[in-house]
Length: 173
Image: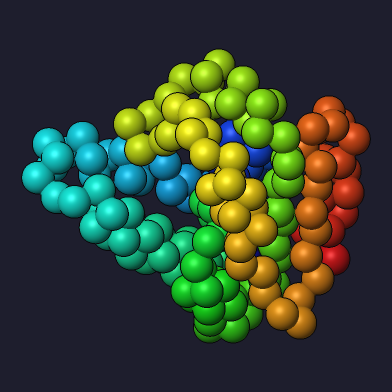
């Protein structure tokens, strides 16, 4: 059993890769944007969006805990920008005897990111464009990674067929 923490800037390919991995491995995907969008739509903007993000993560971690307790492989599709993401993920894998896995979708091209963001069906929780290249660089350089755990960084400027098999093999380790 594994828990996979996806990481990467919005538009870098996390959800696309998560979906293909779920089909190949039968893992359950917990998608941050789905949870956060549902909350935003249900509360009619009565809460601060930042607070909604925190509540979303609380719900997601409860779902990760539940599905791991049932013996399922789980993929958490979310940018990994906080140490708490690593801490909670590793704690839950230890609790349930699962393997902790980490894949970063990396795309260091703000123009390509913006093209992807503009050409996808956007949920209310998702950004529609990168407005600051400096902020973009800061975000991709500050993603959190676990120490002492093998991590994979995939170049999502390449076709997914170039790296999907490497990621599937990594999950099977």
